[in-house]
Length: 232
View: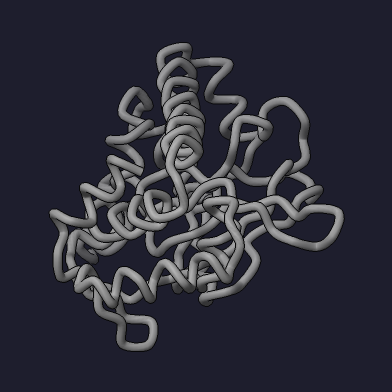
């Protein structure tokens, strides 16, 4: 007989279980494991578009993604940049049946997809699981709102500094990293013009705060960057 580890459901040891599914039985986890699937997305690939029908509940297992909405003139408004171990299905998956925002991969990413009907069935029969899921979705929404407010009360230099600090501390945990977004995407994220963002990067480089090597960013003076972010 083959080792049971070979056929063991990966969901039983997945971070998602500790995050949201800890109240489910192993039987329920096994059911999810039989039907869920992990989908790889290349950098720049669309995961879903605004207006697409919701068929899956999605969880980011690996990579980095951006949630955005397209304006009538075709410009993007980036709403959030999401790292691994966060849900990338917003709360409308339970109410409207269609995605209100688009989602695309900023890096090569892996998304765990679970049938939305299966999630709804488990919410109906397991109140503890439903409460935990609602709590996590609410926390995701609160994070997006809080970050938007943090950006809005800053001036241009403060906004750019905040974004660089965010990537360094919260996403990559390093002072040297490859910036996953273009200058234009940063401008969309912080509601400033691309020209202003480019100029601010040049000023930070001139002042010895950062260095740039193509897409690679090196934060030389984190203390000064923090001051600009807070005072901005």
